[in-house]
Image (cartoon, rainbow, N blue to C red; front, side):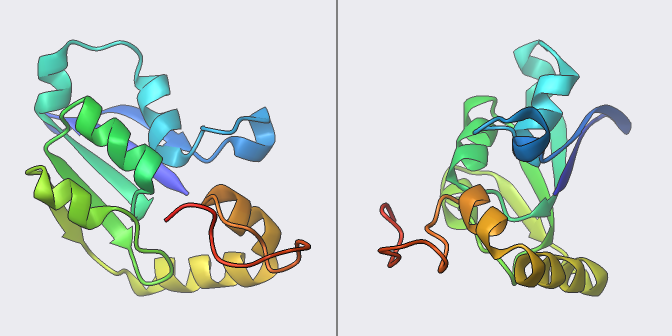
Amino acid sequence: MLSVLVHKGQIIGRGHNQRIQSGSVIRHGETDCLERAGRLPAEVYAESTLYTTLSPCIMCSGTVLLYKIPRVVISENLNFTGEEELLKSRGVDVMVINDIETIAMMRSFIQENPTIWHEDIGERSVDEEGSGPPLYS
């Protein structure tokens, strides 16, 4: 899952899911992107757009809200619909493209890596003992 932060037409940060590579519990594409952008003045975030492969989860949506990023462009939200309504309710302009190639890529990834996928979105995998609904919703 990829993310790019753009300010005044220039890419100022890019990131991708680093949970496995870095052994991190929080390095989704969006958070990795902002980490790689480095510390920036608040006005830079307030004038930026975040482009992301998937609909942001609650953690990544919270990051968007914390830094007051006003626009989020989502490549696809059919395989996973994150906290788009939360973002919209807080005044974030959310645009969903639903790109056919991204939808197919994510569908394939989820089918081939169900345990990793469920871990990434904070849900129990169907493989886990005692699986059931998410612990938190």
